Length: 160
Image (cartoon, rainbow, N blue to C red; front, side, top):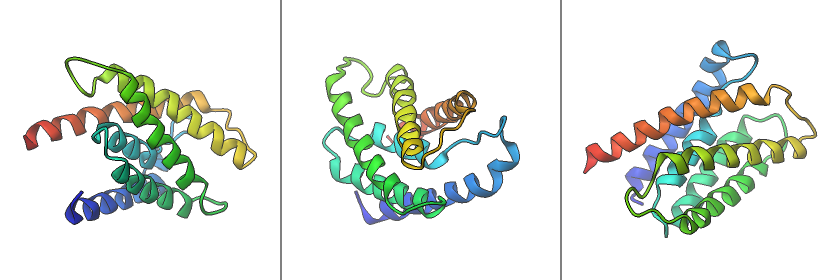
């Protein structure tokens, strides 16, 4: 990863934090807003090469830093969870072999739903709360993740 990509990634995470905390609360769906930080992190981790563990750790550190910075509790749980999720995602992708497309939509959406639910559940256990509108959060985050998936995939095609 070049330093230009690293700075660009940090700036995008910062923009998503600002949008998540200032713009999207005005457009909540029964109290649910998309977690743009997790969605962008998951998209970057999903599309990174299979042997790019250092870049996944970098993405997790930045995403977790911004998540923890704007949370109301301790600093660190999001960083640790995102590192674990990112590395586990790469291991699962190694197990899932696909001959055509290296990054199929069916893998993305099913893995996103599973890892998002794990992330939210573990954070809920850590902070001793459970959000009862989790279905609406899942729907909103999944729709936003689909937009991120196709945007990122078309961006990658245009760069080739």
